Image (cartoon, rainbow, N blue to C red; front, side, top):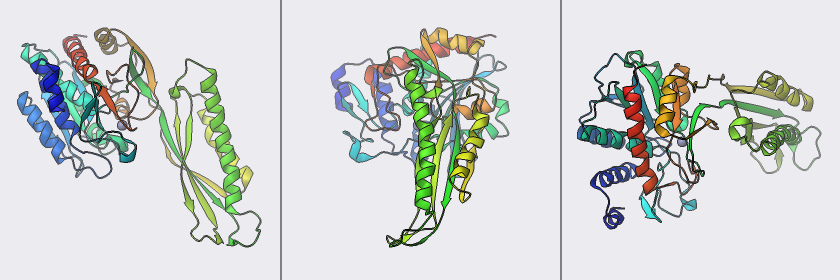
Amino acid sequence: MIEVLETLGLQTEDEIALLNFNSYLQIPSVQPNVNYDTCVEFLGTMAESLQLPMQVLNLVEGKPIVLMTWMGTEPALPAILLNSHMDVSPVVISEWSHNPFAVEIEDQNIYARGAQDSKCIGIQYLEAVRRLKRSKTVLKRTIYLSYMPDAEIGGLKGMGAFTDWEDFGKLNIGFALDSGMATLGDKFVAFNGEKYAWNIRVCCQGTSGDAELLLDDTPGERMSRVLQKFFAFRTMEMEKLTANPDWTLANVISINLTKIEGGGRRNMVPSEFVLYFDCRIPFERMDVDELEPTMDQWCHDVSNSVLIDYTLQELPINPTRINDPYWVTFEKAVEEVEVQMFPGRTDSRHLRNAEIPVVSFSPIINTPVRLHGHDEHIGIQTFLDGITIYCRILRELGELME
Ligand SMILES: [Zn+2]
């Protein structure tokens, strides 16, 4: 990457930003079993270069939370939190056309795991602070920069532990920014809420025995009938999505079969197969009360020996209001924003649960969504433009007096 930078003739502060981005992306903080030491050490050098006090909170062993503070001139005003995460999702190397941790550039795009989710914003926040400090800007509100572990695996031991921390309330956070998602469109997208998750396990029991026989009521047949019910429902949701051009994934229930257990020997019919479904429900979905009895009935209709249980049943989390002064100020700084519901789950939900308004936002337009996918990338100019946007956001939110 460094050789490419030399040919671009960039401004020094852009070079610094890209070099820091490069260093951060090269750290393979990939799930599962992440060793966060290198990230914490790297962020320590960043904090030092910006003269920002930095704390490392070890609320859960092996899951450090990095918290930097840029103190405002009126610290009694609620603070602004800039959140991102240190971990990145796993990679299937064979699908990548670039080494996901070598940070290669092709056609002015930076290819690396974390380029969109969410090391980009982690560096953009820092570089925005660097630029504001260099131009001697002082903000009234305190700005916190947090770097979370484990966001890719639900964040319970990262952001969840942070919002449960006994001193969390003392931070007096009024508004938070967290990661959003890239968009292929040319208008920024900000998310004010997200779907909530149910995990469902269906145990299909039946007759077991020798595979030479034609037994009645085998678990495989029951599993097949259960799958038909779940997939018919899935098809209905997909049809709703197709029938409503304005809708996104965030408007429909997504349900997927994610794991099957059972069997062992090729010539034995086992006594059960166990199915696992991942289900994501939109906040505004009013018929959710019917969902559990309906699924119970599907299983019951197949057989009394088909047992369903709900291993996770999250409750809906209130979306962030988009007409409060923080959100309005954020929108003014970004200029044109489309507000949507996030189709997946982010650390924002822990903050919203703690009743902190959050905008989930990544300033990445005209870019294919590659979070969690292969060939994740961001344009060099898109990355640099994002820093400018965060400078504007911080200037506006940091001076907000309401
Ligand atoms: Zn992610």
